[in-house]
Figure 1: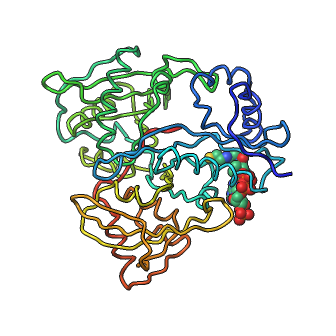
Figure 2: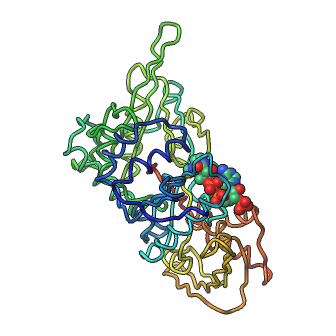
Length: 413
Ligand SMILES: CC(C)(COP(=O)(O)OP(=O)(O)OC[C@H]1O[C@@H](n2cnc3c(N)ncnc32)[C@H](O)[C@@H]1OP(=O)(O)O)[C@@H](O)C(=O)NCCC(=O)NCCS
């Protein structure tokens, strides 16, 4: 008998976690984890696949908000905890759970779904495309100077509810202008500052520094953890940057310069940054700052393509009828085509479901990848091809979706 997919009751949390544990190869204590997560989870979004009374698949989400090119924002479903017991793989259980959550998300009015993928090949068939690439930046602090002395002032702040609220305000101001960024959940701020313990891992221990502009206004912050390293009896310590956000170029430069000037430090390492940073241009030796480990970052699926495309801004005028093929379909049994007429321009866009003949047919996952402008549409369609029904339609769509400022999501879950 096929497993039943439904949302769970709170008291089923330990058995849900037990199933997750077997799939993720993480032998944690489900009772302890359940105690921690129960007050935090929205149980109308916690899905399970059940075979009789046994949970064999897990899938959950929470409400988030995604910033779009041009500064618009859309309600979204952030997906995590996706797993199927090793004894039950490749029987369509994930497909059933994804269809259930996507249907519920549409009913809740969420136009997009976002996630981080453990393995690249899993989510394309469900309409997700890798949309906001990221990279690790390494700065050889001893190999360069900065062109200009930084401005403003930097101060250490003890992790506390006050400093948490201060950096939350900076982050909020920043994320509203950063395409690809997500609203963060309240408890993650406490975890990020080590104000809350978690059974999932060690409590954060590190340093928090705030930047103020010349008038004393807070306009940036950095959280970092030191890593001891000695070479030839000389200190060559590493600073691992967990987060660095600035509301303007001066604060950005000042925070990097501060890190580079910490005594006994040779290397600054910052993971999950955008692949293109301004940092090298601030240095007398631009090669001292290097991106590596480029990754696919945040994946986006357009659950309501017409609403999603109308909500973002475009840098040029364009008019296209797109047909996006959803391979998972509404009931995961068949392909569904979303046919939408997009009228786009810098002043705004409209996008409506239409019966007009399409100019371009493409995979919904390719549209998800190109949606935020971090991936070229002409590249994203390489995975499954595109049908151009009007000559030049692919080049037009590619130019329309491109943005000058690349998206970036610094919020990881
Ligand atoms: C990923 C996972 C949830 C898939 O569950 P599943 O129930 O086996 O998936 P389904 O049977 O619904 O698969 C649907 C399709 O996706 C494919 N697929 C599923 N997982 C895949 C993977 N890891 N790599 C490549 N293809 C995969 C299946 O082959 C199937 O393709 P088909 O329809 O062409 O036959 C499961 O393998 C798992 O728990 N993995 C370990 C935990 C994990 O990585 N979770 C994802 C966290 S982001």
